[in-house]
Length: 353
Image (tube, rainbow, N blue to C red; front, top):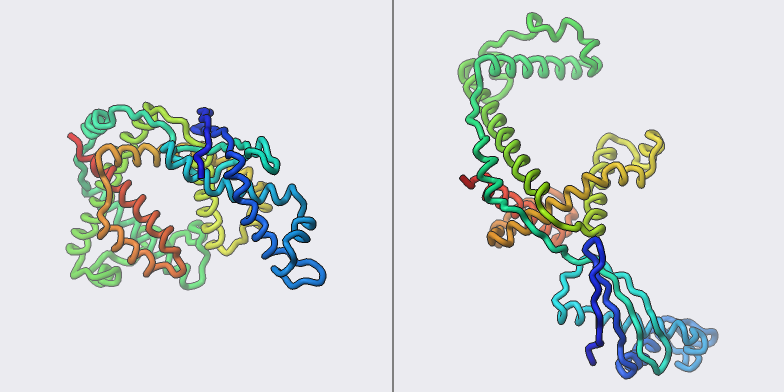
């Protein structure tokens, strides 16, 4: 098969247009295969499916349908070859327009596809080092410890009242959640909370828990500061297809949350007076930011050669599939790879000094 002569035009939003022609000989070589496909599928009176004479099949479907099937078969072979030969990082499904189509003639086409965008990153190492200087040592004061314990005691009392059939409304519980009316903080009480020997043991372990949470919050604050600055300074045209992909993920998460509340998604939309398109528009900017962030992290990972090991991927995929039934193995792997890569890139950035 001859490789068609093509012209490639860069479009906005990280898209390209590939214009070209498939020569007559190559195009016509798909005629028999196209006829075979129709012969196998068409049912004509007096013949079993797939047994009708080819001349009758052709008369039944017409030249236009045959030409379109030939074009689809031809482009299905030619397009991947173009992508490979021209080293095009195409993403998503291409839009194909036939510009010239006739028997015993070349096939003219125009293919528009999104491509992995050109990304110009700022000096992310310098940004990370500057933001990491703002990281602070954290600790838990006695006041924070006592406040945390009080919140826990009130929460437990609240849940106990609910278990007894009372409303979840705090206002209805009134004095029951006043500190003076809570169960005493003694050895018996803390043992009911978990594996604690006494009050001192509980306070020590609870303080460690609060400290871990505070450390995580501080780390998250620095991570966000680094990424926000990287996103602000990077240059990239985010393809619409990637934004749509992030919008789909947001919608799927919302649908799942609504279902967990025992509500139907369509009923929920009617209740709030919105359509799914309205929701997409509301989250469009967030989706675009997510897509941009994903591109930035992936680019940093490639430049720094940061990637999870095969063992890490396999172990996490097994763990994920053991927890959730019916998970597609390929989707699970892609998800795990992305999560692990993101974690490693973020750890790399936060450890730059």
